[in-house]
Length: 69
Image 1 (cartoon, rainbow, N blue to C red):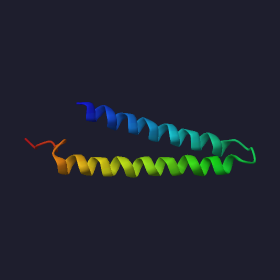
Image 2: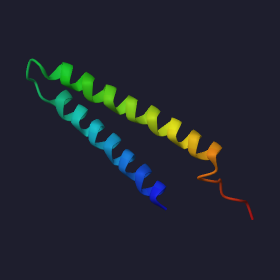
Image 3: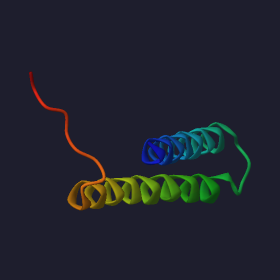
Image 4: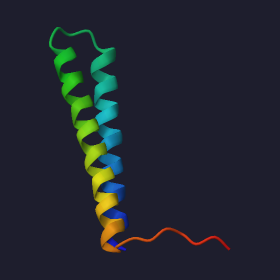
């Protein structure tokens, strides 16, 4: 059950990073392009981490796919 909350927290962090990148994209300050790249890099890193975490959780038996009825 706690694993679900961890996945939700990571998804929220991914959305926050994406929103931060959108904010820096829409503003016109000189240093915002590098901040946007950093925010997108964080998003990619968090997404890869979540993918690997889900693969490890499946192989360890912490999560299981739903069964078809």
